[in-house]
Image (cartoon, rainbow, N blue to C red; front, side):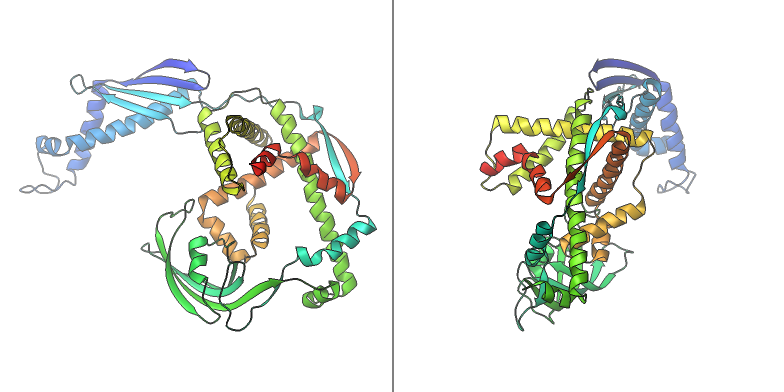
Length: 440
C-alpha cells in the first residue's frame, strides 16, 4: 500500500492510496474461498463447487466488497500515518484498474482544527446576585394568573381544540417485528405543543372525552425510525382548558398550600427564575470572550450546516417573513461561524478537563423540558430516548452548561447585585439580528 498526500489547503486534505494488484487479488481469492464453503450451485454439493465456477459467479460481488473494505482501510491508514482527525465523513473515490488490477483510492478529508485553550484565569466575568425588592415580589404575585396555567375541566361535550390539555391513556403498536407495544396510562399533552407531533395532535382535535380512537402516524424527521409508521390506540380521559386564577388565595386553594407558604414558594421560584436569566448574561460574556480567542479555521461545510439551521429557524419564526437580504445572510453566517468555533473550543476544554454529561443530569434536563411542554415526564423521556436529534441536543446543552460553569470557576469573577428589572434589560441587546428579522 502506498499513501501520498496529494494536496493540503487549510483544513482540506486530499490523499491518494494505492493498493497493488497482488493485494487485491489475494483478498478477492480469500473472499471467494469463504463463499465457496456455503455456496449452493445446481449439480454440486455444498462446499464442493469448483473454484472457477465460484469465481465466475461471485467475482463481481467479491470485488465490490473488497473495494469497499479497502476504502475504509485507506481512511484508517491515513489517520494512523498523518495523525489527522475529522468530524465529517471523508469523501472517498475508488478507482479500480481492471487491466492492471490495482486499486487507487482518493480520500478527501476536512480535518479537525488544532485548538489552543487560552488561560481561563485571564477572563474577567461578572456574576450576579438577585435582589428581590418588596415591590418586585408584589408585582410578581399580582402577575401569577398570567404565569401559572390554571387547567380546569372543559364544559361537558366540548371537543378538543388547539391549546387544550388532553389527558389520555394510549397503547403504541410499532410495526417492526419483535417490538413490543408501549402502554401509557396517565399521559397528557397540550394540543399544538405536543411532543408527539402535529400529526398526532390532529387526530385528537375534534374528539371528545370518552372517545376511543385508533390511527396511524408517520414518525417525524430526527426520530430513530423516521419515516416508518406506528399505530396508536388512544382513550381520551379528560379535556382541560386554561383559565386564570382570580387571586393568590384561589391558587393556594388549588395547590393545597397555605397562602403565606405559597407566597414564599413563589418568591423562591422568582429568585431562581431571575438567577437563571442572569446566568445567561454571564454565559454570554464567557462565550464572547472565548470567541475572541478562537483564531483557528473551521470546516466550511459544518459552518454552512449551522447557517442553514439558523436561517431555517429565522424563516419559520419571523413575522412578517424574513426578507432575502445579503447583509442579513452574512450576519447569520458570521453567527454560525462563531457558534461552531465556540462549540469546538468548549469540546476541547471539556475533553482536557474530563467533563461529560451524566445520565442523571440528562434525565433532569428532560424532566425540566417536560414541565415547559406541559406533558408528563415519562412521555418526554421516552420521546427523547427515541429521537436521536433531540437526545443529542439535550446532551450537548447539559455538557455545554457544565463546561461553561467550569470556565466560570476558573475565571476572574466579580459578583454584582442586581434587581429583576436590571436582569430584564440584559436581554435587550442579546440578538440584534433577531430584532432586524422581526422588523422584516
